[in-house]
Image (cartoon, rainbow, N blue to C red; front, side, top):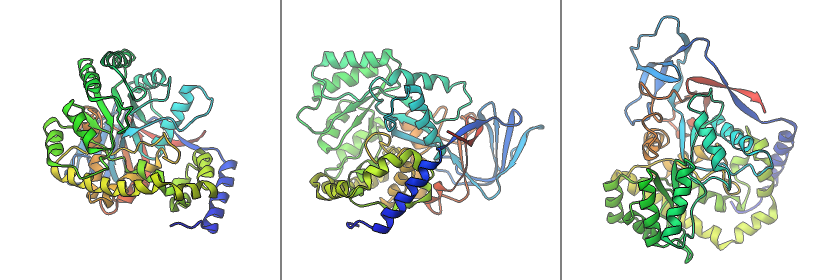
Length: 437
C-alpha cells in the first residue's frame, strides 16, 4: 500500500474525535467472592507445548494455581465460574518491552502504572523492561517489589536499567553494572548496533563477566551476525532482537543451544520503521481502537501525509523491509534447531510501537514466519518465562504457579488472532474489570 486513502484517513480522524470525548478504559483488580475460585469446563492450553486439555478445571487459591485438570476435586465453598466454550492460556509475557510511551510530566509512578494497566488490558500480564527511561529504574523496582503482595490491577514488571551503549573501558563497564546491581535491577541490557562507537568486545566481555558475578543476566540489542557471534563468545544470555543481515550459521546455533541462550525476534520493531508510509489497516481495527485515547497522539503524527511521504522516501525504511524478511527466515531456522524462543516487541519506546496491541501483532507475524500457533503461544508464555528465568513462578498453568491467566472466547490454536478474543484477564487469581481512568 503506497497511496494515502482518503476514506481511511477520514475514519481515523473520526475515531480520534470520539477518543477525545471518552476516557481510557483501564482495569482494576476485583477480588474473588471467596478465597478459592474454580474456573470450570474450559479448554486449557498450559504454555508448555503439551496438548490442550478439554473441559478442564483450574482451582485458584491465594493467588496461585492449586490444581488443574479434567478431574479436579473442587474444594467446598469455592466460587465456581463456568468457562464452558472458553480457552484459557497463561497470561502473555512480553520478554522485551519498555515503558517510555507516556512522555507526559506526570509523576513517574503514574506514568509507569498507566502503561502497565494498558498492557494488562490486552492480556499482557508480565512485561520485562529491557531499558527503563532515564531515572525510572527506582520507581520501576518499587512497582516490582509491590507486586509480590499487592492485588494487582496492572501487568507485572521486571526491569533492566537504561540500556548500556558506547562504554569505553572495562572499568566503566564494571562500574555501570554495579550501579544497576546496587539499584536491584533484574538484569542488564547492552546495546550493540554495528556502529563504530559501539562498546567493543573486550569491554562488553568485562561487562558480562561483572554482571554474572553480581547474579545478573545480560540481554543484548543486536542486528548483525558478526556482533551476535562476539556476544555469544562473551557469554551473553539473551539476544534481544533478530539477526537481520544474513543467515544464521551452525556456529551460532551450536553456541546458543550449548548455553541455552534465548532469542527474541521483535518483528514489530522493524514493522514500525516502514508501516507508516501509509495509514496501516489496523488503525481501523476495533481491538486497536479500544485504547485509541492512549494512542491518539501518536496516531495523529503517523497519519500526517508529509510524514508518510518522508517514510516512503527513506532508504532506511525501505531497507528494513528486506531485513525483516531475513529476520523471519532466521527465526524459523533457530526455532527448528531448538533454540529457546521468547516473544517480545520492543513496544513502548519509539513512535508507533504500541504497548498491548503489538504483542498480538508480533504473535501473528511469528506464525507467518513459519512457527505453529502452539509454538508461538509457548514463546509468549512458558518460553518467555524460561528465557527470562521467571518460570519458577510464571508462564504456565501448573500447580504452584501464580494464577496469571488469559481467558479467550475462541481457540488460538485454530487462528493465532484469536488471542484478541479476550473474555477476561486474571492476575494473581484476581479478575480484572474495566474502570474509568
